[in-house]
Every structure is written in C-alpha cells, then in structure tokens.
Length: 86
Image 1: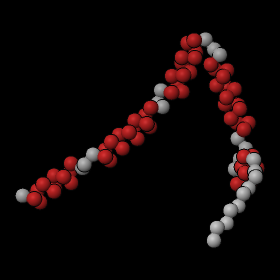
Image 2 (image 1 turned 90 degrees about the vertical axis):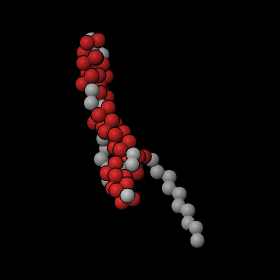
Image 3 (image 1 turned 180 degrees about the vertical axis):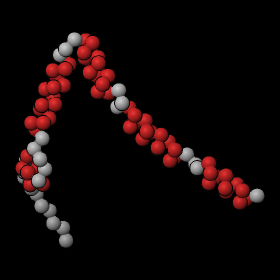
Image 4 (image 1 turned 60 degrees about the horizontal axis):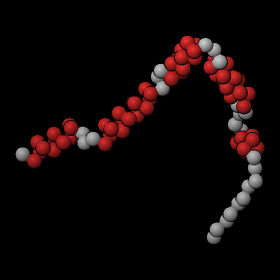
C-alpha cells in the first residue's frame, strides 16, 4: 500500500504549526547592528571582524583533529596485538 499526502503550506505557517518562535525581528536587529558596525572607519571594521571571527576556526580545527584521530589506527591496540603475536 502506498499513500501520498501533499501539503501546500508556507514556511511561516509551518513554523507556527510546529510551535517554533518567530525570530524575524531578532534576525533583522542583528543584521542592522552588523551593517552599522561595518559602516565605521577601516580600523573599526577590522577590529569588529577580528572580534567576530577570531575563534571561528577553533571548533573546525577540533573537529578535524577528532576525525583525523578516528581514522588512524590506535597505537595502543596495535601494540597489544603485536605482543600477542610473539
């Protein structure tokens, strides 16, 4: 048996149906603040961008390290395996 249900709904109607908050005003306020800070002098823009993104690579580097370590054979278990073969 195959049942297809088609729903014609806007993103806003779906958000309200799911009980999610309307964050449009908050997003607009953040965008306005961001734009206002970027309209300052070159030094102010540089300082703002550094404060926004100085730690942005930290989580990505941590994730990359986790993935690299997960893909490498565990040296402890390989050492134990060698000892058992002798």
